[in-house]
Length: 427
Image 1 (cartoon, rainbow, N blue to C red):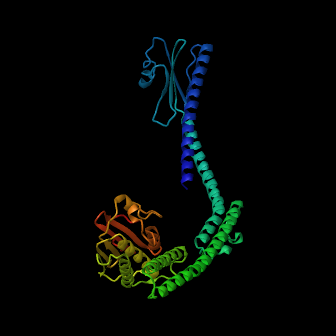
Image 2: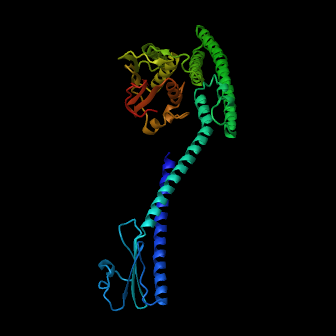
Image 3: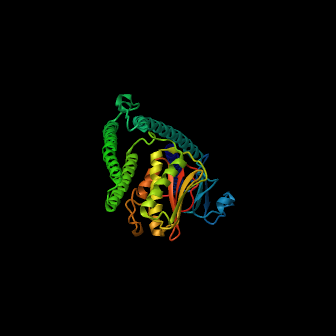
């Protein structure tokens, strides 16, 4: 519609300018032609009277005679030789003053008929041009709409697709409205190919997660059970006891990594989503942290405590939240040699606070980068913070870090839009 309006305005403006220009040229040529005819007749017939008709009024003033005394109107008499425009703007009235043999010619022509012809011509041409542009635009719109309609319908059907259950019949060409051209055929073929590849990918992903869940967890369970049985042997030397402890910790870390990666690899995060008792999950994370402090020999110097200030019950995976909190508590225990670690359960978030080494600004800015590990973090175990963040994002949780070098670090896991996170920038 905008293009149609702009086209009509442009055409009407062009018609108006053309009409005004043509009328001016025609009036100028006409009045000069009348003057040339008079001088020709005056040369042939001395004393020939100037033309005087409803469309032409002429005055001839011999040399030495006052124009007004010869009957020339005062406004004409004041005009010098040349062509002058008379009347209001938009009219073609002209006054030609010429000097010739024996005197001066005043020739006035109103061109009223020419003005009416030009006006009606402009109106008729404008109406016809407007109708023509409107009809052509409407036909073009109908044609374009008929060509775009199947693409629009196809896009609507594709937007409804579930990657696990793609309805290819919905984009069948016989079911699409409008004109189905070669471009629509190509698009339909490309979408079918993409859908088939996506379905194959989903099947491979589902098969992989199912097989990996079994094939990876089974040997880890065997390792954990075997190490538990060996540790009960009273005759086991202390050196082997320490080695078994490291194997058991590594097996637990590996189980956490496998669980996290399998959760991230799954397409449907709602399969194991439910209401989470955050306090119970936090209490288990505290138990894991206390065991780690005992293993590291820092339990006497570091106090690990669970502080409950609210009872949030967000929707999500219990295992995912357990993995996140256990890793955050592990990090706090690893980098706190003395002082205090608190796991605070607030109304809409969980905070893990420690009085450890803290992080410099450049380390804090890169803490969530995959595979990044600063020098003071060498020796960390389990999930990286990048995986922790991705795991939380799967359920709409936010993770952020606030740290001061030498004073400690606070990591906050916020649930939903009312997380009320503090400090730092969400990563």
